[in-house]
Every structure is written in C-alpha cells, then in structure tokens.
Length: 485
Picture 1 (cartoon, helix red, strand yellow):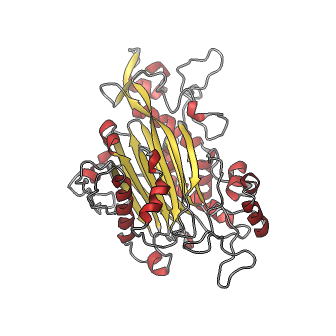
Picture 2 (tube, helix red, strand yellow):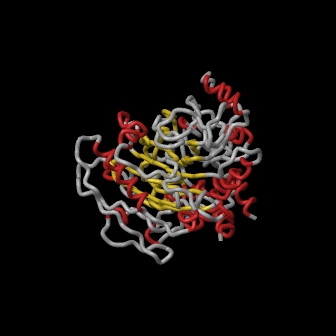
Picture 3 (tube, one colour):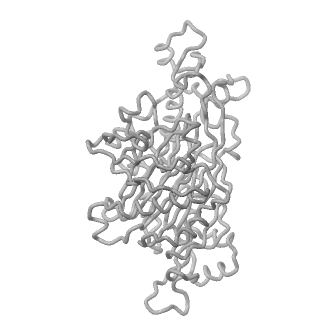
C-alpha cells in the first residue's frame, strides 16, 4: 500500500515548470524545492514556500514554536514536577505553540509493549502540562477531558465538537471538550500515545481565533522488536495553519552503543519516513493536505534518537569536564550522519552548547552512570547527546537550543524555540488565488481554458504540485522508498 501511494504521488512536470531562473528567464516560473543544503539562509529566502511573493493575496506572519523532548524513564508525573515543567517550558518567554514529545512514559516491559494501550499516563501528563501552561497566567485552570486520540486520524472538529467523529478504520475518536474556563490561554490541539512514546500539542487560544487551523491528524509507526512492536518508533501530528502545513514527529529509536548500532537507528528513521501516512478523509473537503512527512512545509523531528559518541568513555568524560562541546561534537554519531548524508539529508540542528543529556546515575543525581570507579549494579554508559531536535523546511529560524536540569529521570529534558513563517491568504475567497494560466502545466491550461490572461485556480492545488515534486525528488524520501523494496 505504501509503495502504491508513493508511486501515485510522483508527478512528472515539464522542465520549464521551474521557478529557478537565470538571466532573462521568466520571473514567474516556479522552483522545485530541493532536499539539498545549498541555501545559505533558508529563513530569509525570497520565496519561502510557493508563490506568495508573486501573489498579492498572500502575506507572511511569524509564529513562535516551542519543541521539547524528554525521556522520563517510565516514571509517572507527580505534582512536584510543575516546577521542573516551568523551567523546561521557559514560560518567561512564552511561545504560540508548544509541542512536547516524551519517551518511556510507561516502563518498557512485556505487558506494556504487547498489551492493550492504557491512556492513564498520557492523560496525567496532559493534565499537568495544561495546568502548568495556564496557571502561569493567573487564572485557575478547570480540568477538561484530555483523552489522547484513539485512532490514527483526528480533526479539529473533534476538539471542540460534542459529536464523536468517525475514523477511516470505522472506530470513533474520543472528542476532547472545550475547556470550561474561557480565560485559559492554551488549548490542547492533539495528543497521541504509542506504548511509551507520547506527543502533546498545545496552541495559544488567540491563534484559533486568528487563523484557520485544519487537518489535525495523527499517525504512529511501531518499529521496535521484530520491526513492528511499539517499544521503539514514532508518533506524529500533522496540521495546517492557513496556507502552511506543519508536521511534528516524536521518536524513540534503537538503543545501544556498540559499533553498528547506529545502522539500526538509521533504518528506523527510514521506516518512519516510509510508513508515516496521513490519509485524506471526507472531512478534508477540497483541502489538499499533505499525506507524508516530507510533503509538509515545516517539519520538526525530535526525541530520544539514541545516537551516541564514537569515543572512549574516559576521554568523553574528560571533554565534558572541560566543557569542550566543540571537540566532543566531532565524535557525535548523529552529526556524522547529517554531514555524510546517511540520514536526514538536508535537515538542520542547532549548535549544541550543553552537556550530554544521558545517562545519569539515578533520580536526584548530577553524576553520569558508570565511570571509574564504577558503583555496584550501575550500568556503564558513555555519556551522549541522545535527546535531539531537528528541523526541515524553509521559513524556520532557531532562537534557542538548551537542556533543562530536572533530575526526574536518567535523561535531561531538551528544548528548542523557533520563529517560523506562515503564509496567510488575504483574498476574500481563501480557496482560490489568481495566477497566469501561461505558467500552468499544459494539462491544467487545457482544463481551465486559455482564452483569459488569468484564471481562478485553487492555490492549494498549485502548492500540492510543487510539494509533490519536492517529495518525489527528495534524496531522503527516495532512500526511504528504496529501502522499503
């Protein structure tokens, strides 16, 4: 099914259907967005993601997006964690959107990996997050129903509506009631749990009033034991803010620091790219929303990615004591893979200026596990930056990248704050944008006629064409397709 879909998404366009031009080439030509890293500053690219610069019907706004990841080592949230969450979420510098990814919110035992999903821990985390976000602004937060999404597909109507929404599988989602307290500043937009991997997306209430939020969907990919159990894998959220699509992927990849273990992690990344799929549903109407990860405009991948250091333990600890992060990064597996194009070709990560986040000896401890002399029963682990945040797409600028100092688990939480552009339709009919038919492919010109200089063509159709070219020509996507055969 995946291969069938991938084949159908490849749209072949004439070579002239390209926005990159030289000399006297037509300035209205549309560029194919490349997966390469040639651009020096993608945030200030003159045409961020489509035709907004040539179309006066579009404008661009900036949003602040907070992305965080935390492996909580199978521990349940407690009330005292509110202080740790406050520091992690950096509420003194509030964002418009909070996207939080967790790993191991339940112990990874046979019962939890093989047994039925239990929403208890996910609900408890959502309650604590909601309380932390909203109590900060001086108004008590009334507890809503915050069940995680029950199916692989979820829509905005399910958040605020009172009716159950049918899913593509014939099951029903569990709607989340609108918070009773109207002064709450943040709303829970989407939530998904797969064994211990969990994602929670919150949005400032003002955004819901200002923009059209559509196509809120989730997808989980299990690629752990035997390649299909949920002890490892990803949970993803797709949503669209007016004319800009976002994808957030929270992942937990294969552990291990032996030589060759990075290959298993690379394979799981390819599997997540290949198997993450957001089906089109009747509720989408004529909105041509992205179906795959790389079909989105702005993509954030984060989690316990488990990449380690190619370095002897004693030397790693020495560099940590010296706080020589530059020297230490030369031995980082993920940085090596990014540089060599092994995985995440064309993706970006901010400069790491903090100590490795794994593995600490125990809760309430600032000492890394193992070392010399090692303590009885303590695991020998070379410290590493296991917890990471990456991004892909134009119109994204990272403002900060840091770790927090909660001692709740053997991992330290990591977060990044981004400023990201969104494309906003200004015309009275947001579904259409006037473009010259001269610059459409022949098949579209035949459909819409050539007798007029311009035609009313769905702008989403044009963006989908460009997006599909991006997906089909992306080296990362093609590598994932090849590995699936």
